[in-house]
Image: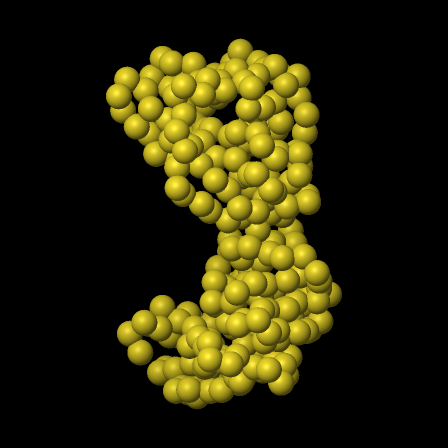
Length: 251
């Protein structure tokens, strides 16, 4: 099936080489589809298909009576060890499913994250992909002033920024809305999701008649762990000039 060609390649890789890493998780993992829980388990695995972040793989036995999980065609090149699958709840279904019958992933099922209406760790919704248990976020108050400029125009200055430090990523600077020069900003329709921070909305920046799309983001209702950044604005470090305590940040 052409639309599942990427899943076929992933299945071939995982069957031949195994995942980059995998480990069981004590979290209760549930997936909501069409108003019903399709699976509910305390025996899920974090599976790193690549080094960057994990996905949840759930036991085939964890699917609820409201869900119908079936094998479709075997994946070429896996000797029948991996099948494409189909998950249905009522009149809603997805074929973005892999089912494993041998190897390190035996009896586990991958349902593509975005195909579910909502995923939960315990009773907490998660977004975009599962959180990596080896990464964390720290949000620190600072009195080191931060200045943001672009093309010689100052866009924001704050004496009391928030520093958001996320494992393996660069520091992001969240500034109070009163520190921003709003005449340069206009609302964007863009939205993105972060498993650690929630749903982000964006602003464009226009300077000298040139619009810079989605240069600024903010979280109106962040996740509990990132609550301090609510309403603060963050400029893309990579696309603007930032000074921290008078020293220009190097990209």
